[in-house]
Image (cartoon, rainbow, N blue to C red; front, side):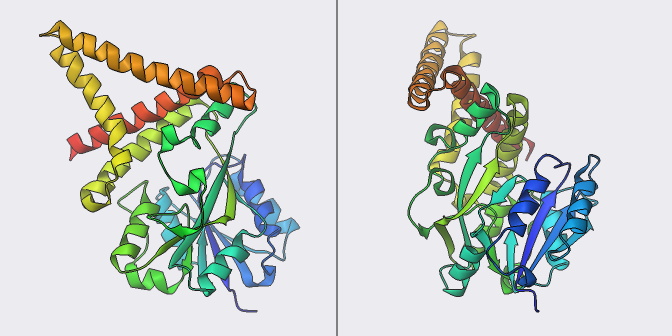
Length: 328
């Protein structure tokens, strides 16, 4: 039977989650004979390849292929996977994402109904581990104070949006707007959606499309992740300045204000007072958020963990954004 859907997944050293993703794809309600999975692996050095190979042996009725992504970047892996695929529809997933069993069916139904040129849904964010850091990071990743008004993180009604995580689209879309931009090591999804909208296309969000996303496990990993996000978001905005949203300016503005007040403080102690006030208000707000969420979820770890995670996200994202602008 002709392949209807190609699921493309870039990955590198994902031994802890790749098996979960493949299990979830095997359990999809969409007909397995019309499905193929293409994994673009960046020459993993852990047991990722062995896990995939073992899955192939025990699940021969799911078409599964590995392509070598020697560049080890996400967009290059995606483009390699697309070129190796044959489905009418392309569904992009992540090695940290575990789709619900109706994920593919819901994506295809919306595309066939003409809901949008690229469709996607909600992230249900889960902690990577059962400790205060991992739980706080997962909680922060779905908190409006940390991530703004992103529909796919916070949830809302089905509607047109600027972007969706991952995305599902017809193969012809690639021929129309081109593949993923390999000069952007992050934000390639957003940039892809910008080009869709520039060509008059529509991005559609529907909360019934749901995937569980495994968040980073500790603050060090979180800082690295959000540094990458901030750095490449600035690069993307320099290319497409009209895509700038007010929420994206808040972290770099906050970081810039701290730097300016520190420098001005050398000449005037009033700047130090203003800086102390700014940071004081910021910390009080975050501590209140942590205490409230700790009380709501009945988990004391959020009282300090949630503020720390949000601080890490704001400072890493904002500093990287400014650094990227300076490098230009």
